[in-house]
Image 1 (cartoon, rainbow, N blue to C red):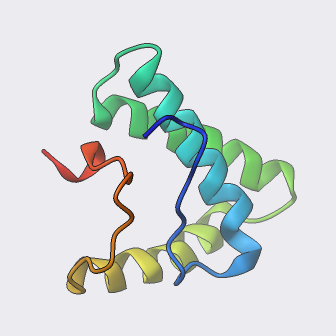
Image 2 (image 1 turned 90 degrees about the vertical axis):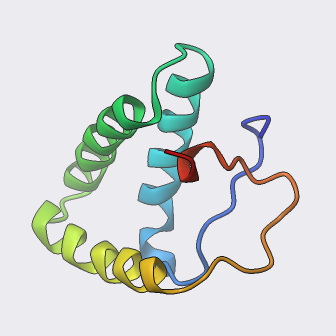
Image 3 (image 1 turned 120 degrees about the horizontal axis):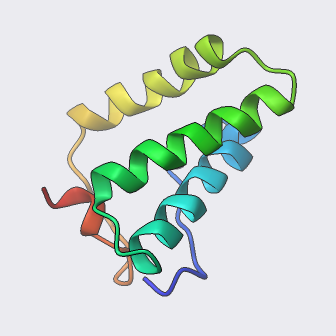
Length: 93
């Protein structure tokens, strides 16, 4: 929760880790430093993630399809074995 440790879903393909990590870092900074709501911080972090994806010459729509598979899978699975210091803020609505 200190913004120094990030846990990435093991289902995310390794080639996408850098983009998801960038999203998480931006989102966490906006929430902690600027006291943004999760939804607003998530929107901005997604824009930053897209900019990084496209700067690497990748197609955003293809990226979204690939990462969407992970998200959809995770939405059907219960959360297990979570680290004790995991920031649960994004999971609370």
